[in-house]
Length: 290
Length: 284
Figure 1 (tube, helix red, strand yellow):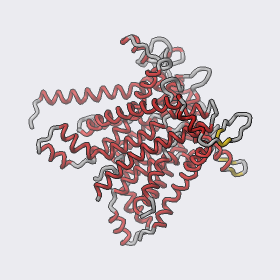
Figure 2 (cartoon, chains in turn yellow, purple):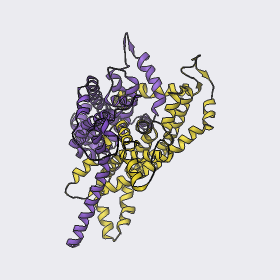
Figure 3 (cartoon, helix red, strand yellow):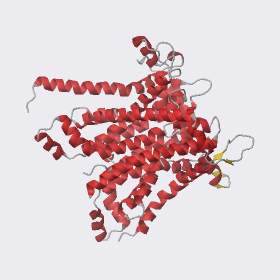
Figure 4 (cartoon, chains in turn cyan, blue):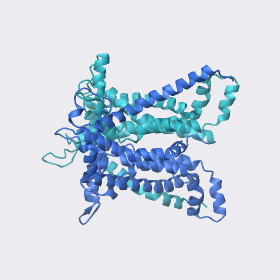
């Protein structure tokens, strides 16, 4: 009754668009990644250099540094987002007057364009008229200047990302929490489980797939973050994440071949990380069905 | 369980205390942007002041009467709306296929679809640029600097997300319902129209809303693959950061204006967003 051919037919427009606009550029990047190519140099030909780009990359301190920064950024930002998002979602499952108003307010940051998020936070932290450095200096006697202190720039990016993306986590968690059946929770309470035990043994296992999916999506997006951090700090020290490093290699330096190979490695690392999460998610789901 | 009045008051106090605190943290950056948008260039400097001193609307009137801004706004509306509709349609068909048909390697296809969202954008701009200016060309017409170019390109990051979201929703609709409709004589379109679409409505709504927002907010592709005619609002925003000095007041005013359409959508569609965001990870 269900002919696979019909299935392929339904899938084909999606596949065609993604093959043209997603896979074809990927093949191009893959090809250039094995070449040396400086777009604006005098002889603008591609020179095949095998794995040289990748060998160079392993010893490129700037690149390794950017990977470390990205990892720190992703871990701290996503970790805080998950915890905060869970707390907010848990609070939103209760009933109290004004609930929908608070829910709307807490969704707002998600809707701000990344480039505008960067602009807003730059306005907050810019020396001269931003309130953050002013009040930090006045109340805590803390010198705050993201252009000069890499650590402060990194933390500002993390806080900015948390501000921007916690609403997304809150919404998925809220969706996950409201889909948890009531009986097991009630049963556990009747059996005398403490609040923490209910959370740990009942809520969390039910929430696990939503949690992993959210982490997956956030990892995928955090690693390729460029525009908001760029707008915030202009690629200054402490915010040279991999995405921005690639940008700097490709554009101001026009070292296109090398930029491509960094992109490939980054993409590869992202895929491996996400594949592991994907197996964790789908494996769990299969187990439940069968 | 009986709770005393004191406990109840205390609980209320904690709840609202929590919400008021988080609301202030959430809104403070947006409030600051609003304050900046209400100030002239001169007023911005000096001691930072978080309160609104007066309504200085010149930044807004300058932005709103700018013909470039009007064009950017129209482009953004056209591009994100068409993209959201296209993504909803394609994702519905693709997800239905992945969910109901025994296709060879369908888990791998599904994962490959998602990987399209992971590409770091910087390196992928050049092949896309070449593709837009040279590959797709009909006489003088190229895909570069056209709305249709952006509409198709945005599918690359919106389709994976949409398919993932819908996959759970459609998997959750019992296949027996399809079968019942087919026995009653419904064809493929009948099943989609009378069974799948009504039951997947909240999921489809979220898919559309989030695709719209992601398309509305996209910057890097729009900035590099358009020049004049098809520029979108986010590229306009970035243009305010210039070498000669950023015009912060107008930048803030424009950011506020950019936020309004997405904020309205969220307020109107708030209910569906939560209903449809489970990613099918929880079976009801």
